[in-house]
Length: 474
Image (cartoon, rainbow, N blue to C red; front, side, top):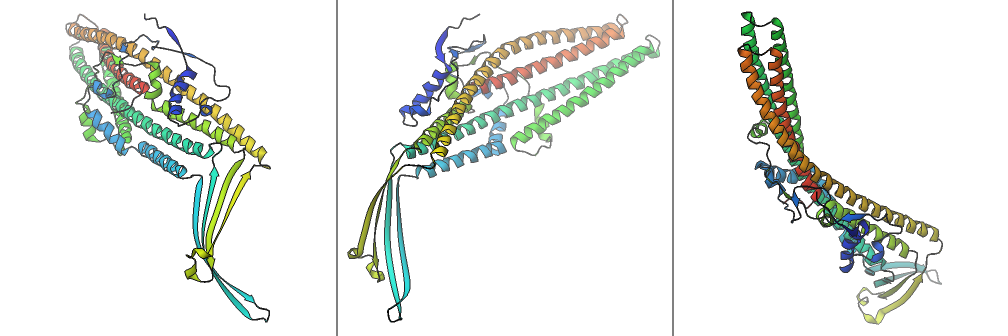
């Protein structure tokens, strides 16, 4: 049993440690990281607390290679191209990217150029109609001093949300790759369960033939014949159930691939050529602190927390005074060709210092609302971290126990198979009864079925472990 020394690393320090990187690059400010009244501290171990068969080496993103299934990579690539959820996540990210571009062009300097012309009719003192035509060329420029970094923070918030959206896309891609892999191996398991069910039917039918022949010559009672026929019927029902499960698994896989869920015969045929197996005995699990950068859902949660902090700062600055300068220049003449003549130039320069007065209650409420949202985002990020740690610890623990289950069930399946063969040979020569034979056969197929299920669960857990460790699909 390993003893892990607890460090002074806490959830808050983990969050701040990564967020400070954004500070250095000028992405956020200190206020946008730490909210008022953050969650209670919790110590995080330097190493994973679960005893497991893994190392702290760098995690390999090509995790699907250890699953010994060559078609899997092509299936994952197909899903990434055609799955609707990925398309939606990609469009969401592109929309966030455009929003960041829009916000980035919203500078504190604005200019407008206008050309106008007007014709006015008036009456002279002698009641004669007088027509006056005026042509104007105007250039207006306004500049707002970003006293409280409000504009820059709006741009930062848009960029941070774009990063969060991109992290959502990466998380969706990795999640889909894991879903395809899990569905693929569940379908392989269902196919191999069909094979076992078919062998069970064949074996029970053979036993029924032996019992029928012995009953005809009076060597066994009619009860044995009825019991044998009952076992054949139960085996046929189980075969039908396994076939139904396989079709459902195939349709689930096809939906993930973006195909019509029609249980394609070619896909069914390809399943018989694949087996359930796994190669890697040790998994590079890395360190708990590495999850902050490896898991896209954590990155997305962190970026949204930073964006919420920026929103809180922006809301606070909206209550403060603002200063702007407006300059206007242009020409005005009754003759169109004179609007480019600087002799007709006029200009003005106006400075404005404004302070919200009658909206203070609303602005104060907006500030408080954004502070609450920032605190909520911090708690959500902390919760995301805890969930991630839990998923890794559970998967590491399960990986060890699943291996023990597979080894034990493999021994049980081998012993049960040997017992079934012995029971049949002893029954054929009259040294055993029908109950012993049927029970031995049932145990043999049940143990083999359980062995395959355990292997499938081991593979499924291994995929979940890689998903929990993060990193993505390469």
